[in-house]
Length: 103
Image 1 (cartoon, rainbow, N blue to C red):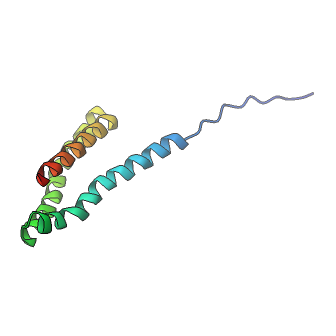
Image 2 (tube, one colour):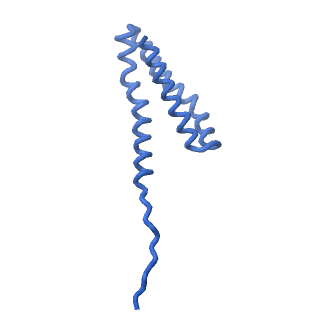
Image 3 (cartoon, one colour):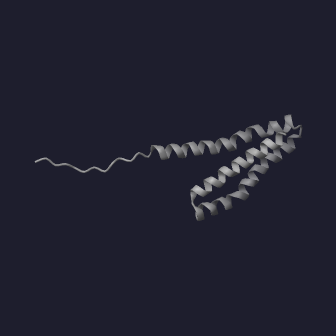
């Protein structure tokens, strides 16, 4: 007598893990690159003092503290996908403002 076992199809989690890792990488890069570039841009290119450059970097932390409760509310009420959409829109807006700052 032979027994056949029905096996459930194996579902790979790799695409979901890869998309989460890519999103996290892009999120950290969108924060890290401006943090590295802004002081030099403000001090050398725009010829402001180091105090102004430090204030701009400090302002980024202040904005993060102010936006955090809003982002938590969006994720709790509308779900993480809507939070990601808002976050990406905010990153795009920040990038456009940086481009306008160089003009």
